Image (cartoon, rainbow, N blue to C red; front, side):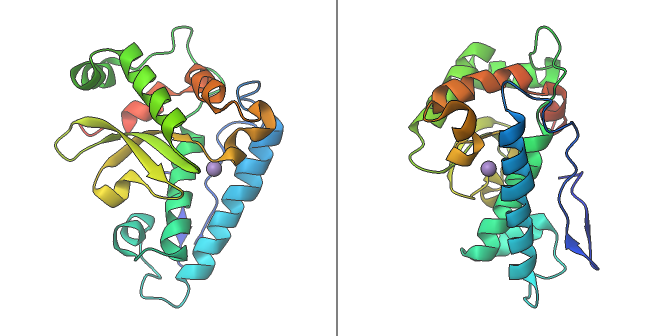
Length: 205
Ligand code: MN
């Protein structure tokens, strides 16, 4: 969210893609990135701006809108803009050889899940079990505890006073071009490109 740029004059803007569109291939192909970032996210940003104009929420931050808007198109699009801004920022084309969380996040994961492999398994199970479209997040409660949270459609952990750390988009638009119906395979391969430094930077410690 810290990278999310917004001005009163122009409304909410697309977050900057911090790597070339084809850089995450073959885990996420250039075609998927061009559709997902370039078209789906652009539509969410456009619809957020359209739905916030001339409402009591105009001028609020993305977080304030998500925390206060009633269920409906404004909240749906605000949630999706937040979810996708965090999503595209959490991957890297240059993961280190042993791509694992740093010591702070590692300690939180150990405390709340036992170990890294158990955490990954639980996250994959939650992604497989989510019926329809939505997100599975590693999120942090206000108490500091980590949890795996399943969110339908454009819902987000922020709505429940939790901090989103790492999110898996299980809408079909995130994987269908590359993996067709093989959601589990896609989710498993994402571990190869997670930018754990970015994820850890979202942690409240
Ligand atoms: Mn998506």
